[in-house]
Amino acid sequence: MHQEKQESQDGRILIYPDYNIRVSSQKNIYGEKFVLRLLKKNAGIKRIFELGFPEDETLVNKCFNKRNSISIIAAPTGEGKTTTLYSIIDFLNSPNINITTIEDPVEIRIPGLNQIEIDAKTSFSGSLRTVLRQDPDIILVGEIRDLETAEIAMQSGQTGHYVLSTIHTIDAIEVITRLRKLGISNYDIASTVASAVSQRLVRKLCPHCKKERNFTDEEKKVIETIGKKYGVDFDTSGKTYDAIGCKECNQIGYYDRIGIFEILSIEDEIKQLIVDDASSIEIRNEALKHSYKPLVIDGIGKVINGTTNLAEINKKLLIY
Image (cartoon, rainbow, N blue to C red):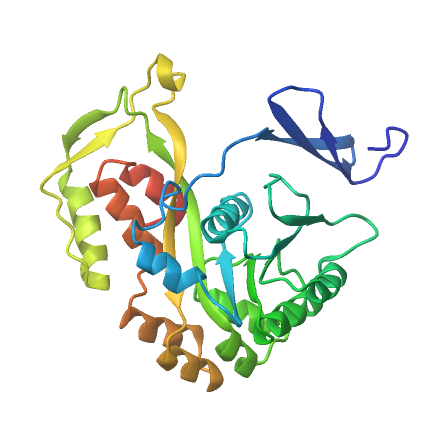
């Protein structure tokens, strides 16, 4: 970073043995504001199921093991999209598959992958054009930010490649709306997008100090109302847990985080709705008739099994 300039910059601190620190600075009326992001060096890539994805290898293959298509991970900033992409790549990786990633920046170096880092002289769209001449089987595009990148990613999916990328939207259904807003045609979305996955990160209860109790009547009512709305029967006769705090979790009551997911598989009926320019509400109603379940369903499932609690789910999804 340029010490003599007061301007918005990105940089890194690399002097620590266990962590890289990504630094973002922004000029304001008082000088500069800095945000530091800790990244653990040599952190092993977790299996997709360890992240909280449904423990179903058939579902993972249906969502991600594709050709001639694109799969998109959707979530706001800081909700673990890149970590999920790495886990998917690790699931799909094998010596006979040519995988190329285009990232800003490359956060984890993975043996056997061709990883390209975006800098001031390169862009996602420019790098993607070059990658297409490198005979890739799978292409990971760190983020779809603009129409040019979206168009090339779509073209890549239509010409025999499998593309993985991320986009900033609130849920999986809105991926379709976001691509439309960028300028992608309904035909291209319907023919190329195979699946959209949305996620949030919630804190896991510390296993050493979480305190067991019964669900309150209010909690049962909230869970039963949501279950009834989406046709899911939750069992609230078991126990839930409160966060307490101990030396293992630094008196916080939570330790580590886990993802809650929703998965939209683009079935034929949904493809037809997209081509017909149906609204996101119509697409959601049709998706609910198939395998799609919103984020809150997976979240409550993780409350029922004692991984987290309703307060954490509510913090992310505002369910009551």
